Every structure is written in C-alpha cells, then in structure tokens.
Image (cartoon, rainbow, N blue to C red; front, top):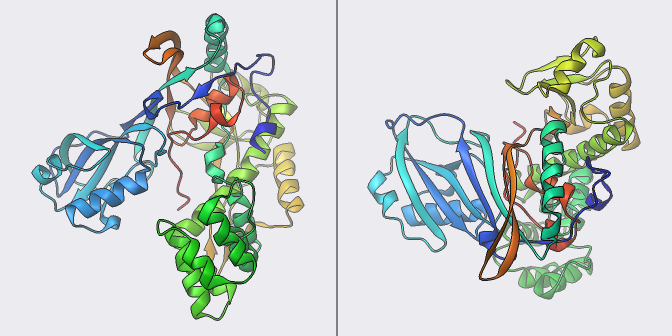
Length: 421
C-alpha cells in the first residue's frame, strides 16, 4: 500500500540505498515543547536508548526505579531500530537515583525537575541524522536540489509504514473495530497467518485458525502480552471472540483504530497530491496555521493562496471521528465519499467499546535545516542527511521522496505516535 502512494518529487528518480545498516545510522533527538523550571515533584531525565522501543525503555526504567510503568511519562514514541534521545518523567523519585540508573542500552544524559508529568505530544520537533549506505554518492548535488525543493514545497504528511505494524494490517484490525466486528478484528490479531510470520508466531497463528486456542497460547512468546491475554480470555470464555478482543489492552485497541484513521488519511493525501498539489487551497478547505496549529475555513482561496505559497498555512485532511469538523465544498465531498465507500458514518467511531473524537491533520509538513553531505567510516561511504521535523511527522516520508521504498531503505523510523484524546 505504501509503495503505491505518489511522491511530491514526481520528476526525481529515487536512489537506491540502505538505511539502518546499524542502529547508529539513524539518530533522532527530540526537542521539548517547553523549558523545564528545575523545581517540582516530577523528576525529568533525558536518556539515550539504543535498539529499544520507547515502551520497552519505559518498562525497564519503571522496573529499575520500582515504580509502575504508568508512572513513567514521555512526550513521544521512538522506534526501536535507532539511537533515540528523549525525555522521560517520574514523580516522587530522587533525581540522584535516576542519575545512577544502570540499564542495558539506556544511558541517562541529564536530570532536572519540573511541576508536570510529561505526556504524549509535549515536544516541539524531532531532529534527525540519518546515514544512507550503498547508494550513489555521485548524485549528491541532485539530492541537495531535491531537499531544497522539499523545503520550499513541503513533504507529504503520510503516516509511515511502521504505523501499520510488521504485517501492514493493523489498519484492517482497526476497520473491523470501527465496523463493530470484534470477532474479525481478533482473527487478524491472532490468526490469518501470512508471509511475514515465522517460527513460533506462525505456529501460534495456525493453531488459532484451527480453533486450538490453548496450543496457540503455548506458541505465542511471552513478550506478546496482548495476544496471550486475549487467548487466555478466550479459554475462560469458551471461545467467545468478542470477550477475547476486549481483553486486549485499551491502548493497543486504540492503536488499531488510529492505524485505520491513518490509512484513510493517507488516501486523502495521495488524492490531493495527484489532483493538483498539497499547497493548493480549495474553497471549503479547513486550513492549518503552522505557527499555532489553529484551523480555519477557507472562504476565499485566491486571497489565502499567497499564505499557502509562503508556507504559513496548508490544507488539512481528516482523521475521522465522531466530533471531527468536516471540510465543505469539493474537499468535503471527497472526504464524505471516502467514508461512504467504507460504509461508515462519523457515529461509527463512537460505540460502547470505542470513542474516537477525530481531528484535522495538515496534508504537508515543513522540513527545516535540511542538508546532505558525503561521509565515510570503517564500514564505507554514506550520504548523511540532517533535518528537523515538527512533532507527529515521519522521517520516512522524507526518505521515500529520495530513495526507493524497498524494505532496506524504508523499514522503521524514529517518530512519535499521536494520541486522539
């Protein structure tokens, strides 16, 4: 699906290359949304994690400090296959105890205090340093020109491939949730074995598809807590799949629905990009003011277009939900047609097990301080890209404009997931 999405740089011939030949080839460093005042009951600490997801790092920190995982706050979710520097928080813990943490693959860089717990979204931007190996260094000047074009026109605000899980099907689980078919949702979570499944997980999925739930539970590795919890609930409920799905952690269920929202949003971005560009305003658009994140209705596209050309504003697309504000005019008609094609209304996002308000998301995002240079180390030569992105925007969206979207060139990234509260 991601491979079929159109590029902004439609006339640029993407390079081949390998990203993440090593964790150190992908560095992300988050910038906080606000300054920390050095006082308060919350201890804030900046860590550098290598080869760990944010959730696993938070779990390891909580265990080392003997606190609940829920007591550990963070502003963004970063990918495991990277070196990531990010801020964590924990309340009523001595800063000295945090400074002395010794956890594999985690290094504490600095410690301070603040009055509030860190929460998802409490960051301003992410800064990236990415080394691409086995690529054509002779095209350095072309890549530099391409980055200048992206700086001027923006980057399509696609959700990256990692949003949709290793099998690329989390959005399908989310669609089943929104449609109220929790039995089908569980079938995709626990069964439907495919080419991405191997070893014990393949055996677990096959056992589930045969209805052998106890055997499936034996095969699922212990790190897959939601899958094991669902199977245990199935066993207790005599195979009632709805009961099994509802045993999955609510945050995980929310992630599935978010993936479906992301899938539909990507389709809107692709349609607008193909139809005239992501900078082009239309009557009825809901425009995003980049300086503040405010959204307003476009009633005079010709008058507002110079602001879009200057990258002050951009059209938005839908993350559907029962309280999302719809565009009008042609943009609204396209969004409504997409929902109708899916057989849904806004109210489908609100039921006894689901409450998704929805929001607007800009169709493009700015890239700042973008540069590319040629470098070399003991493993050979590489192109090194440096740039900064607003929170919630994917570095893979930049990479796919420049490099072929092969698994080697686009697998994973460090970025945050958004919370639809």
